[in-house]
Amino acid sequence: MSNHGHGDQAEVLELDAELLAEHTASIIDWLPITAPRHVVDLGSGPGAGTFALLRRFPEARVTAVDTSVEHLKRLHDKACEQGLTVHPVQADLDADWPDLGTPDLVWASGSLHHMADPDRTLRQIHRTLAPGGLLAVIEMAGMPKFLPDHAPESDVEYHHHDERVPHRGADWGPKLTAAGFTVEGERTVTVHIERSAAVERYAHIVLRRKLDPEAVERALRRDDLALRAERTVWAARK
Image (cartoon, rainbow, N blue to C red; front, top):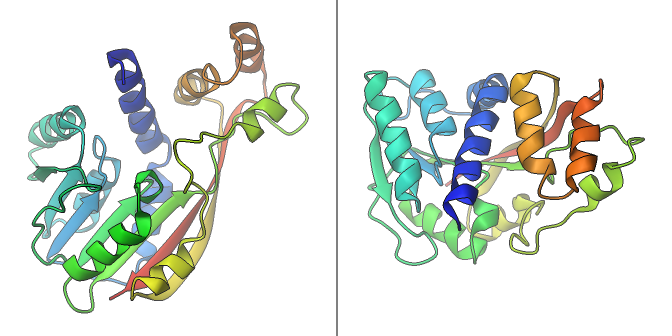
């Protein structure tokens, strides 16, 4: 990935964190777990889930796992600025599984669909969790959308599919059961966030990958530009 692409990815993840902060906090509150001692954020990126988990469970040891050294550095620097302690682990989860101890809670937000073999990853998580531990899987139901159905560009936006992530939009319930988990809860969170500077920036980065520059400019001028998404959450017990 180019530096430009990597910078875009980090910015998208940070915009995602900022815009979805309330939704993320409500998802953590919904989880059937009270005071985990050790929490692992699997595929942490620059730390959207990590910091939400630290706020909710300030007494817990929180480990952030990601393949990207750059993301983990951003996360570590941000934690230091806020006086927080995070334990970063750089690992390619498709290769060697790192020693993560026996966490009580594993948080996997937007990460499992990137795995080459998600079923193998789920089995690894099951082995890693403490007895009775919880896995939270959070996935977008497709890509975020910024335009209403009747917008001229919406057909391109809605039907763009990235072949590099074939597991995006999967139903994780049966996969969790096959890996030995008991699914204790499933919910879908609808996101609709009205236009703001952060929504405009997010839309610009995402839409320019799919639309020509003129179409992007037309889209950004629309009064009904908004962040529209659905996140599905599964809470699964070992």
